[in-house]
Length: 151
Image (tube, rainbow, N blue to C red):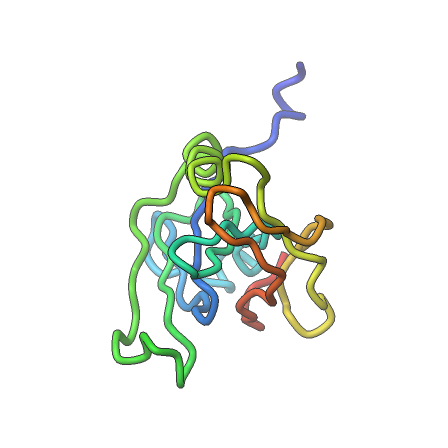
């Protein structure tokens, strides 16, 4: 395969329903749209395994992203936390392991969210989830929205 056609490495992270992406860090510090001439590539994958009753949305980020700050929405039960910086983004294999550990019979997924107001690059077309036999429910839910995330 031609090296020019190989996709760059990507990283993944899970984000609970009610949390959204804040600041992004790259190798030179905070992501600068002026320096990069674009917003960071963060893509909602449309999969959400349910862990202890909480929908955990899967996001894919470009390799240049080193850390992601996430914050709960106001009124969220975790709103007193303020923010969390995700320093260990995971590989595709680690994301698949997590999804299959939570949903061994069927991967949970959501209908394509409304992309018009979400600002999320290519949310992905997937099917609605269904109940699993292992007790981990999968439900259709809307992902956290953040207007600062663009392709």
